Image (tube, rainbow, N blue to C red; front, side, top):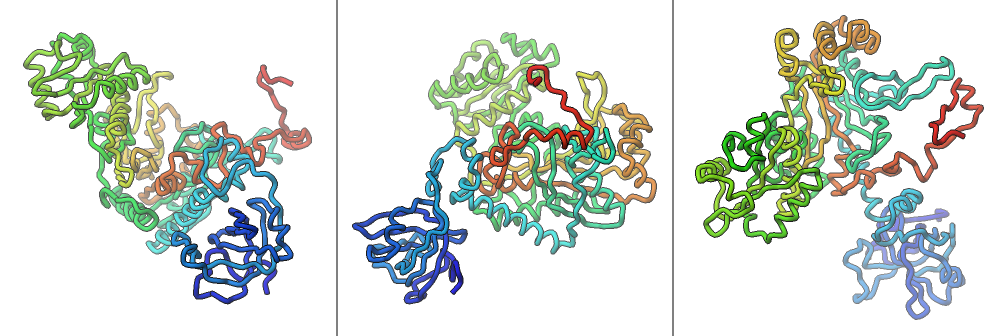
Length: 593
């Protein structure tokens, strides 16, 4: 007989009655019923109930063993009595009567229970992550992550993609987030960088003659944590294709996303062909470029209606180039006054001076600002908003960008407060037509707004003859339930377009050639039209698992402060190691030692 197991803890059934088996696993839960000890024995595959009778020579050991100790049991499979059958457990019709019981590894007092879902400080969970991952929810999350990776590989391979591996040690990029730098021992004063993404390498693979690339790629960015972004490192489903249009890319990714959510989730998919929303429309209607479109509550521009309004906060914005935007919360007029006060408090918490509102109740308009609106302004407002009895209107007024941002957040707040977000619905959309450039107010210059390697719509002609701030790019984001899964682009593949685009952003030819030598050279030797995208694997799993925080779907994540509490990283290194790298620590003044 195998030294540890003949079966796993999830496979035995009533048909196995009478067999002598050996199981190994963790003591999940222990109960003492009148001298008879019952164990739920757990391994990766499931649970099996084990009985240790008082006449068993190992009874004394079994009596003292703690939860989460590792044991091996040899015994006979017997059927449970009808009243003790557990229909919620695959092995619930049988149990093992132990003949032999061996303690393989004892468990100390646990810092938190593993056999139930109790609240526990995240720092404690991450310090004992090996225990945290034993919990059912966390265990299933990591298995789900594996299934996403496996299905993605299978799907893309079946559709003609080939998996390639790109370097981890590369050069620092002047664009994007902050790099993680790796000092070179052989070249004093020089550094590698961990890749923020395989962007240039996957483009070079297209130029090298490969046609459909994918990789579940590790990426590294020295940036702060967010609920949907892990600091330090993350993984993305990196894709690139040659000789494609934007439409080709969209069709390819839609098929993948729909398959992942259909096969690995019970959620409903709003539409298998994802709607496309131009960037400017998204900002005007939803206040952001990653809208949650599971619900309506779109912002409507009513600026022109209030040029002569007695309410100065409205009319002054019209005269100074600002905006007045309105949201129609259908059916919300009959909410209690606290609902409106709480919404205003939320807006004030974001820095607003207030949140004007009107409720259409009992055949009339009610609210603090109604008395300032003329009959004609009221009529035009109702017509513009399509407002009816029972609706409530919420107003934002100020600089257009600030108003869009504020009311966009109010929109999501109202969606939650009114119960409009269907948690069982998955609603994807594409955000398209991003501006190629934006105005950098701090540096008083034109800058790239998104991806500098994108193809401008209109090509070189647009760069030469349009105001840079009016040039759109073949750039796109895929968004799901208000979470951005990825940015992507049809790439520029012509050196003259690259030079002109970077020139507009303030980079001269020498800088372009020195910072991007590989792409610059490759573009001179026949580069095919190509494009790609890289949806975040961590974010996809987070959505599939219905987890609010990305750390819940990563086996060994960093904390919000970018620390690994389990492995004590980052940590100081020995002076000998610094000397080998020709480095010396320059301590911040307050930390100088």
